[in-house]
Length: 432
Image 1 (cartoon, rainbow, N blue to C red):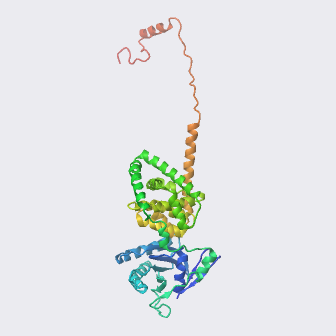
Image 2: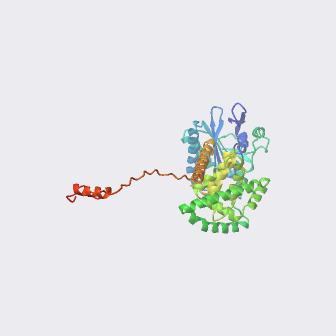
Image 3: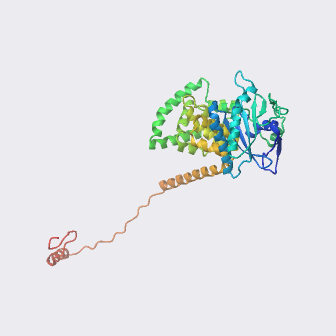
């Protein structure tokens, strides 16, 4: 058995000691903010007392052939990410969370996942970081892959504590930390519609694509599409902000009702342009953040087949706003889904890594604020130039002296007699 300290705030404020696999298993939902179904979760430990640090989650690969490379990638990501923050882990805790498949018992699930746990332990050990504990959580029970003592870790597993009765539950309630259901339930709020309305949304996306894609590929047309997309998005945000907020499921239904299929299709297609998406990312704080998050979530649900990959943009924006406003669990879920529909989506990759590493989003917020401020200044300067009255500059002219009498002919004749060239003519008496 091992003891681990989990700090939910500054070290001086509150410390909780978790003793053994049972309390570690009970603490997992509070560490993540949700119950992580079908997931590998890895948590870094620091110091002699095992203070929790960075953590990451990934869906368990279905094919066992993927387990070795995935284990190596996860170990490197967590350890190297911690090092970049100047805090190399002293140890790691691993959780494998999966309910039994059809016809399978929870004990069989644990045994099926044992090779994955071993590969994760080996991958961490290869980077000189030991795995202090590896747990399997399935169907309300937990097992330790590290503890050989059947007196505390029997082969049939141990039941998890009743919800709300563990030491971590008490501390989380005191700190105001909530567990928002399961990962599956959180993902369902962002998944494409499965109602009869999906067919209408697909037709709207087909029509919008035929109209907007050629414009996006044109330099001038792309700017027009960006302006129209951002303008429509702002109007939709205003519409959502004026609607009353209900419980999450009812709120999602109301938001879907407030946005037409054509409006959703127009914004979804417009957000496929990177510059337009980056402009939309500026709505990440203050009064704009709440309505922007609701809009991005609603648009994610409108990316019906065969437009699932288009959801990467609104999902990433939803993850960014969640992270920016302090909702790390919501950010991880949205960004994880964005990478599921488009694993190569760079913006989601960067945000997901930064969020998992526990970085401060303020750095990116400052950058976006600066972009917005600079664009505002440029717009004001253009407006000033266009409205400034034009002044006509008078060109000073010197009065021309007009010769009197026969002075002009006489002067010309004198030049001819002396052999001088007349003004404007080239050459001289010898023809050059």
